[in-house]
Every structure is written in C-alpha cells, then in structure tokens.
Amino acid sequence: MDYLPQQNRILKGDDIPAEERISAEGKRVVILGGGDTGADCLGTALRQGAETVHQVELLPRPPDDRNENNPWPVWPTIFRTSAAHEEGGGREYSILTKSFSGENGVLKRLHAVRLEWGAPHETGRPSMIEVEGSEFEIETDLVLLAMGFLGPEQPGLLTNLGIAFAPRGNVNTDATRMTNVPGVFSAGDMARGQSLVVWAIAEGRDVAHHVDKYLRGATDLPPVPGGVIV
Ligand SMILES: Cc1cc2nc3c(=O)[nH]c(=O)nc-3n(C[C@H](O)[C@H](O)[C@H](O)COP(=O)(O)OP(=O)(O)OC[C@H]3O[C@@H](n4cnc5c(N)ncnc54)[C@H](O)[C@@H]3O)c2cc1C
Image 1 (cartoon, rainbow, N blue to C red):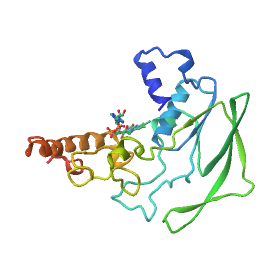
Image 2: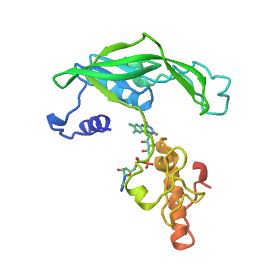
Image 3: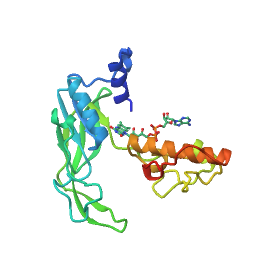
Image 4: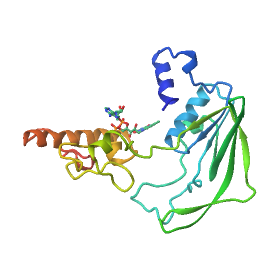
C-alpha cells in the first residue's frame, strides 16, 4: 500500500518528493506473495525498469486443472497467468522467507528455505514442512510485501465499540448487515474479508438499504442480497 498507490499518483501527474519515492528502477526485486497484489507489484516493478523481479509464494504452485476436491461450480483454484506475468519476471512456490540481511542498513539478501506441504493436521490445513538443507539466498535490493489482507484492524475503533468478530477476524453482521452493536453496520472487506470491488459496491448498496430502513422504518433503496439487485 506504500508502493502501488504511489505509482498511481505518479501516473496521475502528482509530484512525489524524491525521499518518499519507491522505485524499482535498476533493482533486483523480490515480491513476497503470489496473489493479485503481488502480480500488480510485479507489473509495476517491471515497468519501472527493475533489473530482475521474482515473485515468491509460501503455498505450492496451483495445479493447471481443477483438483478432485475443487469441482465446478466452485471457483477454480488453478494456476493463473495475469497480464503482468506475461510481461516478465519469475514465480517460485513453496518458499518460506526466514530473514533478511544487508550492509550499513541497506538490504542485500533474502534468506529462505524450501517447503513441502504434508497431510492436513487437525485444523484441516496442510502441514508445512521445511526441507532440510534447502536453505538458500536471493540477492535483492527491494522487497515488496504483498502477503494479503488479514482482516480489519481490531484494536481501537472496533474494540472500543465492542464489535463482535467472526472466527476469521472479520466484523460479524446479521442478515441486515448490522453488527452486534445496534445502529453499527458493516459491509465490504471489513465484513467479508479480502475480496473484490464488485462485492464492495454491491454490499455498500445493500447496507444503504438496511441503514435507511433502520433509521426511517422504510426505504425506497433496493436491497442487494448476495450481490443481486432484487
Ligand atoms: C493492492 C490491492 C489490489 C487490489 N486489486 C483489486 C482488483 O484489481 N480488482 C478488485 O476487484 N479488487 C481489488 N482489490 C480489492 C479491493 O480493493 C477491495 O475489495 C475493496 O477496495 C474493498 O472496498 P471496501 O469499501 O470494503 O474497503 P476499502 O476500499 O478498504 O475502503 C475502506 C475505507 O475506509 C477508510 N477508513 C478506515 N478506517 C476508517 C475510520 N476509522 N474512519 C473513517 N474511514 C476509515 C479507509 O481509509 C478506506 O478508504 C485490491 C486490493 C488491494 C489492497
């Protein structure tokens, strides 16, 4: 969030003070995180003139076709190549970053180990096994963290209000998108978890319907349950 919005502001014509500028130009870039945000970082770094770009992911490489436990019509968890990936750079999977090192306060290396993913343990998630002797280093000048949104920031506004959370840390709401605190509603990433702009728009419209109804007892705004205008 330091890197990508800044590039958008530059493209819009904003002047960014040199000391705040984060540029990949001429640098050996490592992106931690194999998701869409990582792909955005990869495309941006390449276009800024990075010397090399590697996108590193903790999880294994997804299969080219659906697994048996990933049938239609659920979203296919398969290996995807975005427009950014077509522009260059490399992708590596099943890698755990252990530490960084450098000289005189300047980053020089990333230290990592390769992983094997074993049988699921009691949480249902596969177990992560570090491969003995597989430690390695990547020479790097710029590391971009694109490791995902873990949920809304709980301490502060949310905990002060006494808001209840769902098991994965998102704000819990009822069918009217109201939280456990009467008159406090939630929608979008905060309630759903990391997602897409289309969901944020649909849920924003839906929560407007419920807020209006809560305040006035009636509303002309259409509900958008499940993202579909009814
Ligand atoms: C790097 C990145 C790339 C993405 N790329 C895509 C993409 O290509 N396509 C796509 O569909 N989605 C993409 N997403 C996801 C998408 O941005 C989100 O799903 C969407 O923005 C969620 O909308 P929202 O309104 O729920 O939350 P947000 O857009 O996060 O809006 C929440 C707003 O609340 C403000 N806020 C926070 N705390 C307070 C407070 N106490 N008081 C007042 N305001 C506050 C924040 O400043 C922010 O403006 C991307 C996300 C990231 C991080």
